[in-house]
Length: 188
Image 1 (cartoon, rainbow, N blue to C red):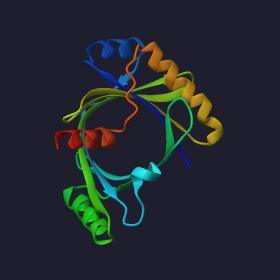
Image 2: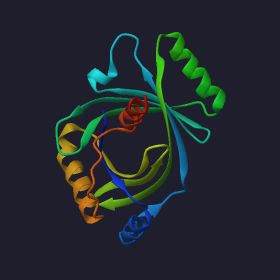
Image 3: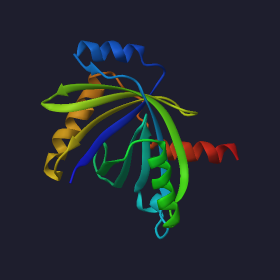
Image 4: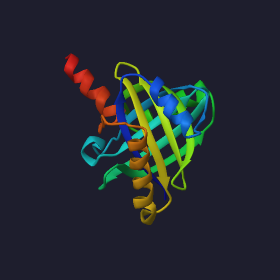
């Protein structure tokens, strides 16, 4: 079992943050585009259970992800199970079709451009991603993984401490899916 420990912040641009990350010797990776298709379950309401189920396309790479309900604590912490599946658009479409045939449906599609940075911080590997989410704005996520529940306090402290050091202040507690759904509702 693995737990995702993250906190998301709104930003008004990423340039100053890139400079701060460089001072911490963070290693930058190439920018990538994510397309996340969130699915609804035929017999339970993920909005009520605070779970998420999606298929993700990153270039030609594909992944399927389940995110469990949030655990208590100062960060957004939840179990995450993510598995790769065959590459390519055809595989993505076939898996979506398979889930559709089983009664799942598309709740929303969220697209974002992501620029990941990796660094070691307080003894843990941390990922900081600079996101531009289509129709939602610019964000920064600071994320670590905890292998067990016993590891959660250490991972949470590292994520929060790094966010403070990076001078991130405007916490965005909602997921991209929730923001997307809220924006769609506001337009109606």
